[in-house]
Each structure stands twice: as structure tokens, then as C-alpha cells.
Length: 413
Image (cartoon, rainbow, N blue to C red; front, side, top):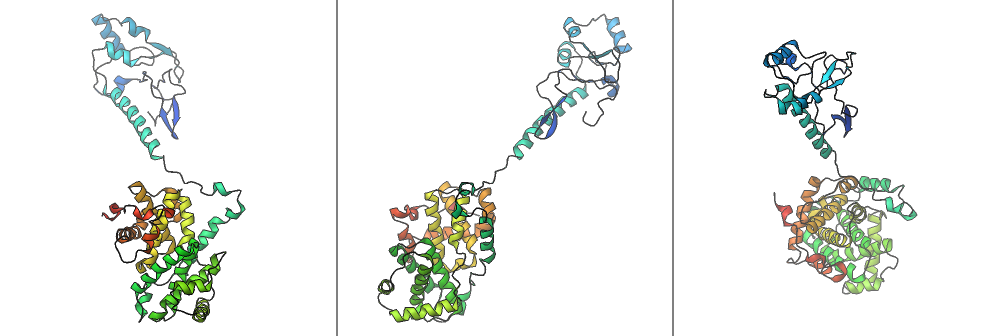
């Protein structure tokens, strides 16, 4: 067997083995499909076992076995004689014989020795183990999501990993405390939700870029976390934040008069400009922050998304923008959880690929808490008082994403 030396006495190798052993899955296994087995000195290896007429002898059949055959006058069957082959012993003796066990089993009335059964069983077990090991090494590959942009200089493939590593490193610096509303006297989290819901509708009516909306919400939260604002000035903060975001992201910025008109002329031009000055000084002109949007684009590539998954994912993430509770999650986790939830809705089951896990740095378990909250927001989106996001995504432009059925099974423990 596997641990014995090839040149040790009594080891006979069948002639129909091609090289004795073959490679399979990185391991040496006996070649499968041969009917011959090479055994030697079975009577010596098994204490008290009855003599077996098909045993292999180094020189000739044992004297005891020969005497039995002569006394009983039981000559070898013709078929068995033809199956005896002379082979060269590795140790040098010339009269080594090998007997076909399958033919011997058919002609012998004696039971098969235990060692023969044990050897055959081990060979079968090795074959089965090889199949199991081959299945275990079949792992899901991680896809190179940038391979299609290697010739696109605007994709900066050489630096993209470093850029997103920097985003992940600095996202905590651009986030706000999830408890900052507790320090406010005249405003609360419900007022914030009303403001964000209204800004989403204004953003939709002006047909602004997605980047603008996410930056607007970020500017509102960062400013409110550092400044004391009275209730009647809260909408002014929202309008001014959108103006600043448009100046940073948009090619064509909405006119200031249009923003005054959209706020029902409640604020004057002077008030907006004064608030703009206060906001940029409070935020120290820091507009380059990693919002959930930048992670959404990268993670959607990792998910190999189509238009349907993309629209549904943005519906999920915009539901989160309204909710003050979601400020406790970093932007990258929020984006990953939105895409994960959207995939679960479309597939009807949990799905998170190794490629997505690699590029987001979040496992399925890490996303589960955030994803379950998103499902709850999705359930109440069509029945709550704040329906700005639901109305936006119930149009053909956004693929009727809001009409999708929530992933209720994610709420099951």
C-alpha cells in the first residue's frame, strides 16, 4: 500500500497499470477502471486464513497448496491457467506470477480473503475522496471589473483601487454624528425628513445630476451638526445646500430666482446669499467628500448590474437619505446594503457574490442590519406621509422601481 517501498519483497505491480499511478486533482491516486489487483503472500499476511488457490507466490505455489491440489486431483481450470502471467520481479527473481483475481473468484469456491476486500474498499474510498476534493476546490472566481476600461484614460484604472481606498479611509471624516439632533432645540429628526423629502422632489423637477442630490444632503447634515438653526430657517438651509451642490457638480446651475420661486418666495435673494456665505465658511469650503453615490457606482460595477438593478438600487438608497436613523451607517456600507437589497428583490433570494464582497469589503452578514431597515422603509414608502421618493420612482423614467415588492424574507430571523 501507500507507505511501503516499491522494491520491498512480495510487491507485484499489475502490467495493465499505466505507470502505476496517475495524477488527479493534485494527488496521486490509483488508476481507475482496471480489473486486476496485485497481491502477494496473502496466506502469510492473514493469520489462520485458509489457503487460497489464487495467491501469488514469489517462486512457485506453496508446497501445502500444491499437495492439496494433487491429493484432491483438482487441476487448474483452463481459463485460470491462461490468466497466469509471468512477470519480472523488481527484486530480481524470474519466477514471479500474477493471477487475475476476478477470474479466480469465479472459479473458486473459497471465500475472498479479508485483505482483498479491504484493499478494494480502500481503492473505492480513495476514488470517492478525490471526487469530493475536486468539488471543494470549485470556488467562485473574483471578476476583474476594470478589464473593460483598460483603454479608457478617463477610467484611471491604474489608480482606481487607490482612489476608493482613500474614499473608505476618509468617509468617516465627512460623516456626522447619528445623535446630533439630540442637541437641537427648535428642530428635530422629523423636520429633517420633511426637508430631505422636499429636496428630492426639487432635485427631480430641476432634472439635476444624481451627484448633486447626495452632496446636497451631506451639506445639510454637516451644517446642521455644527450650527444652531431655528425652525423657520431650515428650508433656507436646504435651498442653499442645493445651490452649492449645483455649483460644485452641475454644468448648468439653476438660476437663483428659480430657487426662490420653488421655495414659494419665502426667502429673498439676500438671505440665500448670506446663508451661502455662512455655510461655506462653516464647512471650510470642503465639498470634496465621499457620498454614498461614489460607492454606488463602483459597487454596481462589481454586481455586474443592468439598468433594472441600478434603478432599484438608487430607489433603495434614496429611501435611506430621508431617514435620520441611517446616519449611523458609513456611506460605503449604505451603498452596499442598498445594492444587496435590490438584488434580493430581483432574485427572490439572498445573493451576494464574491466579487461584490471583495470590492465592497462587506460580507453578507455585515450588510444584514442595514438591509433589514431598508426593507422596512420600502414597506412603508407607499403608505407614509413622505412619498417624494416613491412618486419619483413610480414613473417610466425610473423603471417603476417603487412598484417592486419588498424583500420580506430578509426580515425573517
